[in-house]
Image (cartoon, rainbow over all chains, first blue to last red; front, top):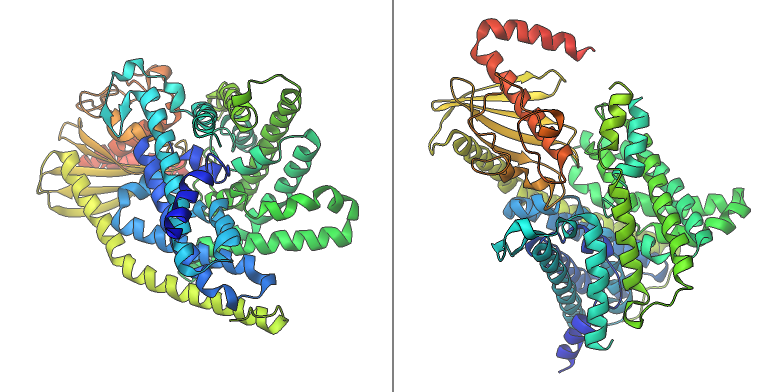
Length: 194
Length: 205
Length: 204
């Protein structure tokens, strides 16, 4: 029960995109289509789960004053490892997400969760927190990516729903990212009463 | 003249915030007042320029010893250390400047435009307008990018100051209206698209 | 377990230890992924050569590297089924654009593929299919030797990718560079003059 609560907390109550408003750069930069948003969300989730777990395991070995640099080293090595694995086994995804993969290091969600949750809780809870927050982030990115893809190109996950000629290209471009996210946050806040 | 082109294109055409989506967190986070926006811009410009030079030199070492896979980790540590150092030096040398920038410095470590630009410059994958990507063009690019960031942040903060006095529908208050505003600004900056090509002709490149 | 106090030796030890472990782990990951990454690159290249020539079993017989007018490396892959040329343009929207183009004997484009790019997802990244046969910016069957390929904005015949003129220009420059290298290699006499022309233009 406790774990489900942690999971739910990450997906809804503390959704990184809609409630905490963290990690905006990848949120806006990689969501030109649903599949891109989802890949970025999953990549971030992988790093988040591992970083939460490792940091929670070693939290007592790290003196307080050097905790931030230590966390950053852990996160940066995880991201680099992820980058190399993606390059080796999913080169297509790696090509699409480009520069935003190494930039997962400076995604405030990861350092934020390390500091706010993993440093205070046990390893198992931390894994679930990583999973929950990661899922929340992935859902938000997929949703935003889906909306932009649908409005911009008439496709969803690459499947054509209506002709591209009626699409509003604006939503695939940079301004559309800001505007779509703005309205999405407003709608989510209204419907979820958060 | 090509340097001037890098300068214009990094500020207006490929603005770091509006077209590259880097540095969005401080862009949304510290843009409620023009004063703080200016302080943040100055701090970013300062750190970004130094960080670009230092990481460029580190990249040479990494390539030399075949350790390129340590790039991310080395860069982020260097940036973190650099921010700390700048903070300490500023405190000693110019307390006035420290007063103005001090609060923003710790925030800069997690500003992705610093790491992003450092990686772009180190790999030489930024738009150097036909020049060889080297330390000089890299620094010109970094300084212009920082100015572009400052410009975006300051304009946005000025609009938000006005926006705070407006009667906004409840659901749109706060972040939603800020994001829509940012979207409109991004649209305005799209108007600069292609200007670099025209300038290139004017400059005879 | 009690938290370690923040004394100087403690802090130094912990930071060093973490960094060493992290570097070691990364070196290990680097070692195990280096093979697959190389294989991927080799496979992408082989698949690329096959797809741009429109065959399935091209065997690379000879590779040659020359320089284009701007001093960028152009790699010519001669196969038993025709010639595929890899060229780059450093001024795409997000950086370098690397393409592989297959040419017929007359110099018309048989096919192309984008090997590497850093273009905006959903915009410039469309280059990988935009210029294919039957798409809006179709360049297949065109001969860059008769008329340089340029976008319609610059007076050419190729429709640029919507909202990605910079990418389209860079892409066509790379294709043109590939053609010149191909033309230079297939006609030895031309190659001489071409090479000397390139020599001079490098120093401009």
